[in-house]
Amino acid sequence: MILIVCAMDSEASEIKKEIKELEVHKLTPNKLYYEGKIKEKKVVLVVTGVGKVNAASAVSVLLSKYDFSQIINIGIAGATKPYSVGDKVVIRDASYADFDVTAGNFGYEFGQVPNMPNPFLSDYDLIKKCTFALGAYEDSLYTQDKFVTKKDIKNPGVYDMEGAAIYQVAHMYQVKVISIKLISDIINSPTQLDGYEVFEFSSSIILKEMLLSVI
Image 1 (cartoon, rainbow, N blue to C red):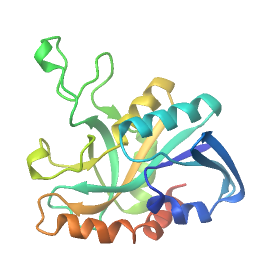
Image 2 (image 1 turned 90 degrees about the vertical axis):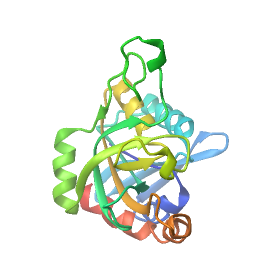
Image 3 (image 1 turned 120 degrees about the horizontal axis):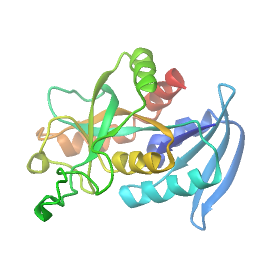
Image 4 (image 1 turned 180 degrees about the horizontal axis):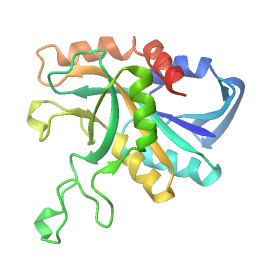
């Protein structure tokens, strides 16, 4: 069984339409998830909500309920140049852009959660499969609870608000994970915010086709 993780309804709406034999379940009193089949493969789709806590809590609950063979995190993300809006990126590793215990002089790197690897790694076979299927770039993902603009950048690459938290939970449960991102905005572009708002609501069909290519 495959766990498909999106942050927002706007990312998941077209994917949900592809689920056959659809069953709707309660994840929490106020949150649903969807079980069924896509291309004859058993799947669960969850829309976690935005941010690290929403992502980690939803994925943790589902990993405690089901035996998943892999997690696919799919959605939109910001990126630095030379990326362009609409580029597809397969994430090879994920880390936090706002986690810092380096002042304690305990030997941890910036972005590293104590007693956790840094970065968290995508499954190698899934990277190759997805890169080939999508004709996509490979890059690093940086996660923080903030919409990223120029002043927040420490490394070039792809930025979101959920990915590293999903990877951390996958590491804890020892489940293979991959993230595939559709670039929605270019950080520090003069039209970054306006372009993001337009792209967010037109991305669902592209994300669905990306998922169908890799599942």
